[in-house]
Image (tube, rainbow, N blue to C red; front, side, top):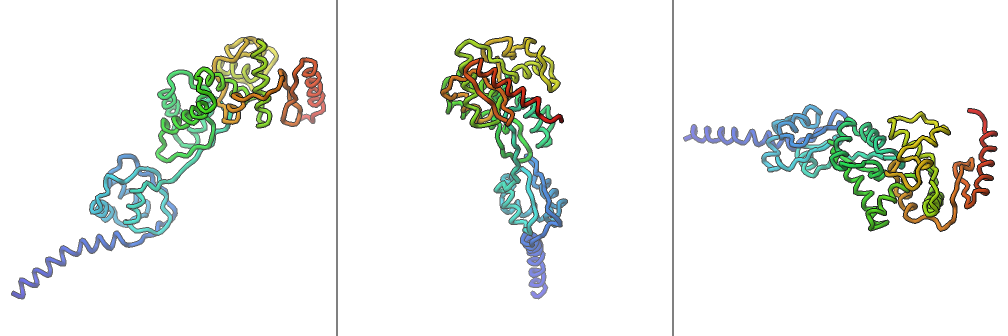
Length: 326
């Protein structure tokens, strides 16, 4: 009888020992040796996640992690992404973080006015993904013309990066703004093009509606826009490069985008305009300006007549002559 009781007690202890070990492992707080970032790939198994956490010093036992996940029934609910571990935590807390998707957030800021290829280059550099992946993703979203369809802003993203998802958010952001400005799809296209020129002509918010007015007024009068950024873009679009200096002969070299040799707006935007330029294109100032030239302070002088404009140009020439040589 005593022997049977002894055997029973031993059996119970043998059964309880693994449970006790698991409870101890799962509840023991562990401090990572240093702040560690771990990327959990999409579709990763519990075994792989446990190994990643163990190799990073976040947990002491991959087996305890797998058993705890199984007992909790959380295997299918662990989310992918980049996690940062730096505070002491036990396995239970770590599983809760993986279930909630408490991943690291990243951001990328895209300046206004850049060409689409320049924006993709920034995205590739900031995210570490190859430029080809961004190009392919954009082509899948926009099979036709891709210039001027992304809204420059600061965007949040998580890792692993999904190019199509991030690019789609940029496309949708511009689309929402354009629908706010106009329900006419054809007018939206014109606003994109006008705004892209405005973006290249001035960096000052107070000048954007004035440049928009000059564009509108010249179009209404049938005058060529004669705006240098369109010439530069046409050269780049035709040759794949631009020297950085515009020459007099460039103004007479015809391309689809050269607004010296062609009247009206170019066929596509010449870059990706920001929200301020899009709003200015939709709401030009109520002025009769037709011309503008740099004023030497970072802004421009505007004029309604050629005589006034020529006087402003002469002032600009004087400023340039007295500017210290670089």
